[in-house]
Every structure is written in structure tokens, then in C-alpha cells.
Image (tube, rainbow, N blue to C red):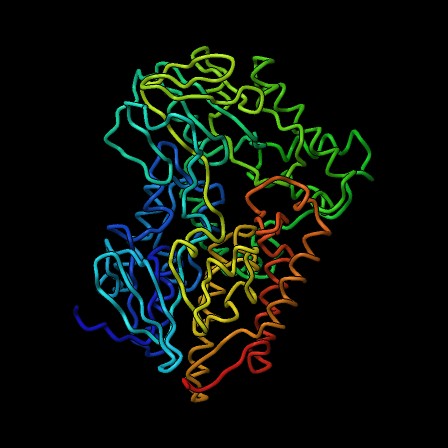
Length: 533
């Protein structure tokens, strides 16, 4: 076996997080390497190549802010950029900052083991190459480990089986009979695009999502120039707002607003942007009565949009508050649903009982299929981390530790796993924010921490159990003041004893940033710093 390559820091993943982490590690003089399972940079935007894939956050906001020159030289084509444009942007960043020689592609980390005697991580890969690193930084993404439903008889299907998170461009869908499972964000985008060309489309829905119409015209030269001129002010607002958007919630209560005025405001917000409806009043995510009024408005709008009452009944959410599950951007989805060649199946009413070589069979009918597509989401926040066999102090396994629900201090570090950092991990704003803003904040905090450790002569840093526990209790306490824990959503995790755990921090990106800064300023309060031994 070849000798392990020795590094100061090993980074797993070459998306937004891993690329920026490499830039910062080089700035502070550490030797670093990024390992990436794909054959190119991009992370989420490398893997998610399904038809219609695009970001549901404005591209001028969903972009790096660390270099004003980069902001000025890159021009976005659309308000909500498509996957190829976002990938091209990330490839440009990799080239601009000379990152490619620091990234190894087509290599997957399968295990990592902490050595208490050396104070270092031994990391194993699927290629047989091993690494010996002082720090292990997981830039694996909160939404990167796909989940597949366990359909009875799926092994009998003779046609292509596609997953939106691992798309195969070689499969031709035009004129084909397609059975499509899942209508979250990815599923809504896929259906909108393939609905234009497939022969027959059967959409299997379990938990429908609220999808709001988003116009997406090309950005004009004047709009691009205005955005570039406004970058400094916009970035400052993003970094200190609750959700890291440049648009703040409007003051006022939905329930206290006069009905006619409330209707007028909600009508105007309906087509503004993905999240405008949630931001129209500042109590929608906190007050059940106000949320119910806005939820009813959205339900009525969807009932007017979906022409078939039976399809509407199956696709309009009835048992979830607006915002309790992630709002989806709708660009052509309901146009596709309204087509005569599209059938909607509610699997709660009509569960799948078998899959044959060319048919999906429910307890009420059969649906022919040449192709099956799964847009069934991810093992959110924890899946990509648990996919690695990580062993910390005293042989502790992170898979076992997190079987009782994910835990982390600030979403950055896990007690019992020294010198391990998680970018946008559980307990951070992560998926409840504009994640690029949260990524930059995490990367900068970690790089500053490592530079401070070097200056102090410290070799090891580990979260304290008491601080971690207090933080996770705070995360839960804040979440309970909102509507989020009431929904059956991927924001929730499961514990081994059947309890539900809310994973992201909902206290606000600005408040979270201030807390992280406070911890660092207090000498890394809640962490233990020490020598390797």
C-alpha cells in the first residue's frame, strides 16, 4: 500500500463550499487538497443535471461575494439561472483562482479515523489512496445524498430508471411513457420541462408542495449594471438579515391587516419571487392565524390555476402550513399538469403495490411506463456525512452518534470528533438560508479559526459536550416558536427512539453570524484547544 499523503487540511467536496475553502486555506498558508467524487467542480450543480434544473434564488444573490472583481466580471443571463449557467460560473471560479491543481476528481472518501496519538485524521478512499491530515473539513453539502423509495418489484422494471440527482442525459424521453415520483423542487422543475415532450406522464405525489409562479425573463444590460452597482449594499443586507436575502420581511401582521388590503398585498406578492409571499408580513412564519390566512390565499390561487378539479385536489397541500415545507418556484409546472396526457396519482390514496417490466401497479390501477424517474429528495443535512464511516475519539462512530438525531456545535463541529469541521452542518442556518451566504460565513470562520490556532500554537480543537448540548437545545427552542416543526418536512430528522428533531437553525443568519463571532472573540468559547497529545 502506498504511503499516505500528508496534508494540513483535507476537504471533501468541490462545490461552492469546497472551492472557497481551498482558496482560504491557501491564503493562510496551509497545505490542502480537495477530494471530489465527480469528474468536475460544482457539487450540487455538477450532479443535478435533470431537465429544467435551475436555482430558485436570484442569481445575483446566489453567488460568491468574497471578491468584488469577480462580481463585476461575471454577468448572469437570467433572474433564476439554469444549471448549465451556474456550473459555468463555478468552473470560471475554479479557473480564475487556479483551483484545479488542488482538486482530485473521481475519488470518493469512504472512511476517516482519528488517531489520538498523532492528533491527525487517516482518510481512506475508494481508489485505495489514503491521506494523513491534521484537519478534515466536510464540504459535502446538505442536499447531496439521494433517497430512493423502496417500491415493491422495482428490480423487475426493464426500462431506464433515472434520478434527478444523478441524471443520465443519454436517455431519450420524447414520446415515451414516463412514471415520475416526487414533486418537491426538483420534481416540479423536471415535470415542467419533460411535460412538453413525453408521450404519457404519470405523476406520483405523496406530499404536495406549494409552488408559486416565478417569471424568469432574461436580465437586461441595464438590470445587470444596476445589480453590479448595488452589490456592496446588497451583500451587507444578506449577511445580516434573517434568511440572508436582500429582501426583508415587511412589517405588519397578516391577521391584523384589513381583508381587502391583505388580499391586495398578497396578490401583488404572488408572482414577485419564490419567497415574496412569505415576506409580505413579518408574522407569517410565527403566527398560526396569520399563516392560515396566507395559506388559504395560496390554496385558492392554485385552485384557479389547476384546471382539473381532481388533479387540484391531489396537488394542493391541505395538511401543511405555507412555508412549513420549502416553497418551490413554479415555471411551467402547472401548464404541464393541465395537459391531457398527464395523470396525477396520490400514493396516500393509491399506494404502489408492484412494479413489472413495463408497468407501475397501484391498488387501484396500472400505469404503463417506458421510463421511471425518481425526484424523491435527499437524506438532508446528515446523509452525505453519514455516508462516510467516520470514527472519532475512543472508537466513536458518527453514524451511531447521530442515530439519536444529528448534533453539532454551531453546525460547525461535533463533540468527540476533534479537528473535524462541517460546513453548513445541522444546527446552522444552512438550508433555511441563501446557502451561499451561509457557506461563505462558515468557510471564513473555519479559516480564521485555523489561523488563530496556528498563532496560539494549538494543534487540536474539539467542541465541548456541554456547549454542543446547550446549542442544540437553543436550536430546538427557537424552532418551536415557529411553524416549521409542525410540518412533515425534510427539515426534520428522526431519532432512534422515534422523536422528531428540527435540524436547521431558524434564529436568523445575522444572529447566527453574531454568535459565531462572539464565540471566536471569547477565545473559542465552547471549544477545547490543545496539543496533539
